[in-house]
Image 1 (cartoon, rainbow, N blue to C red):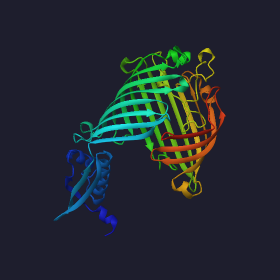
Image 2: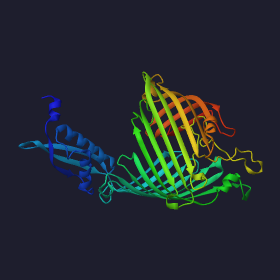
Image 3: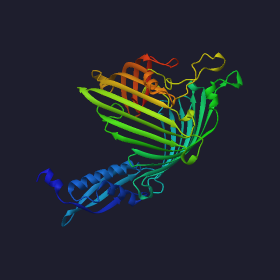
Image 4: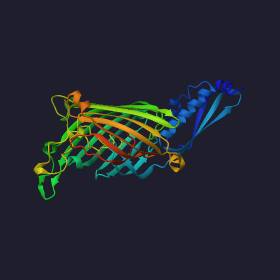
Amino acid sequence: MDAAQIFARPLKIRYVRIEGAQRTRASLVEDELRDGGAYDAETVAEVSTGLVKGTEGLQALGVFSSVQVVCDNVEGEPGLTDVTVHVRERGVASAKAETYVDGSGEGGVEGELALRNALGGAELLAATASYGSAKSGSVAVKASKPRFWGTPFTASLAATSGESRHSRSSCVELKHRVEATVATKSGANRLTMRAALRDVLPSRDESNPYKYAASAEIVAAAMPSTKCSVAYQSTLHDSLNNSAAPSDGAKIGLDVEWAGVGGMGDVSFLKGDVAARAYTAIADRVALGVAARAGVMCPLAGTSSHFSDRFFLGGPLTLRGFQRRGAGPRAAAHPDGDARAPDVLGGDVVWNASASVAFPLGGGLLDAIGARGHVFANAGNLAAWGTPPGKVFGDLRASVGCGVVFPTPAGRIEANITRVLRAGKHDETSRFQLGIGMNFF
């Protein structure tokens, strides 16, 4: 009997025994096996596939250090099998400290204290604190529960308080928010309800604390602002063969937000952001990559956009050759003839695109650690709402360059040499850039 015949033989699960679960409820394990399709399977192949998927689901819960599944024959019943699931639970309390890179490209350190699976349902209660390289910091408390109310969704509630220092905008931004999220099991789709209190604190003159050292536009934004919004994030497609240094596949992501729900809050807008990347081999170990992103924020009810909600552009992994938040609309000027570049204000319409070719570096140690060379060209722009489309796409920023890419578990590291071909009057550029993160173009 060949393998195909064996896998096609009838087989059903008679019962499941769970061993090693001291705190974890048996129903949690059974639900993962059921979702995998093991309980409805009718052939050897279907049972095998269902148990593999169920095991992967159990491991994804993060409460077990090991999961093993054993199938035993049932005497006198060749079409039935008994399944034993051996699990080893992790400890309830944990602590960790790690480095991070956020979506804006700022790095820092983060510490976390967590209680997981204390009630046997894979629930999580965590407190985190972080401090960034730009002297930004935050504290947060989060509670989450997978399989909320017996559904395949994960529900979470989080409260965050923090501040971000924006040297190119001469201000400190304070953010306090509470958000409730429902996410699919894979995390590919997330629906969030958010209530936030924000404030912008303009920088003050070092020699005169009663005087602002910020532009009139930043000073005008210096007042508390409330926001009530609903946001939806989705990974529409992801077939990348490597998240940090892909050479094949594609990824499409969507992020939308509606602020001013029910007339609550003092900001009202619709905001959408879509990004796509695709890679394909054009020669042996040589890959072509193209990427594009577009975002629009449309103010509603006669309002204007708030500084805290706008798009920003520039950075070593997004618009190479430009400093982080270094491209786009600026204030008219600093007060009293200050020689610094005018404050970055952000924008309501953004786009950027890139094309790159990645190639091996000739073997040796660099090849062993996965390092690759690449050449690239990228362009983009950032503009205020109401800017004519001709200027949005015509007044672009552009650069070309080459560098080395190092894929790591923490993200993609790039060391690049760039040449800026086109920039705005006050854009801040850089000949050499080093960047790390998972969001790249």
